[in-house]
Length: 424
Image (cartoon, one colour):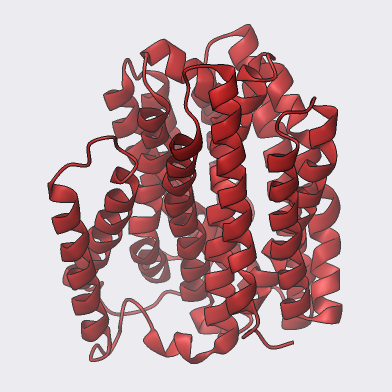
């Protein structure tokens, strides 16, 4: 999130377009999504705590490379390396927490987990804006170094040691799923280019074929990389699809909102970060409460309320795009509350649908759907932006932003359909 308010500074420094800028985010998200399932399996074999610490250190090293990047190409390569570490940090933390907490308290625990993440969402954009305003955008990556090293030490001291799964990792399956996911997301992201490379359709079709081959192999593996039997659970399937739509919606807003606040609102990056607080700040206030509501009222009701509120908030943002910032505060809060309550509900629906020994796999699938949604949501929002607007002047940017917000709203509301399958 700290990257969001620095996006305009990066685009200006490297003299690149909005369409090119999205690759600084897409490269990161593609890497995470492609390696998630493989990372979860490695964690099961070497220990979740050990891999979590290794991932933190890789993330720190990637952050250093991002800070030293001298053009968009080197920044994208550094973001890929950073994404390698990030690919297992979130699922490992989620799996460690879920395994350590009893089912009746898991909703509350995941709510607190989301609330702490919400605190990061508050600090990230505001801190990023302050850093860019007072220093340079490179410092948004340097700041990860002391934080990452401290977290690595504390994790080694305090996190529990998990049991280790026996058996070798299937190398062919790992290569297949990594290549398939990377190819699909890359192809989808390329459709925002003015001149789509001729190779894109071929890569997309090939990736789908590889995905099918991978799935067929999993049906006959004694120790599959992807446990297909998990999808027999309506709660898990509904939660994963609902998560996909919620985050496809949210990431499109994350990409455009800070730019809109700075360009159209004529504010600097620090002020834009502060102006995001009505949206991001709700996670700290409502996510822990949402966990308790989920434990009491069930995952389906709270999850549906979440995606509906988020969708309504983004529709309201679109309607208020030509107004002053004060008109945006309430829509931002409504969308933020939706994300705050929907996230913990879908998390519990997914991890609560599997036995304890499969929680790592369920956490990986949940986070894969979240990141796949993000990787799809950004190019869809960019397409909507350029379909109705552009960057030639502020009027065109506002029109494009309005279209992107409507696109995000529709994506969020589509999440209602799979969530109807989640048990009450």
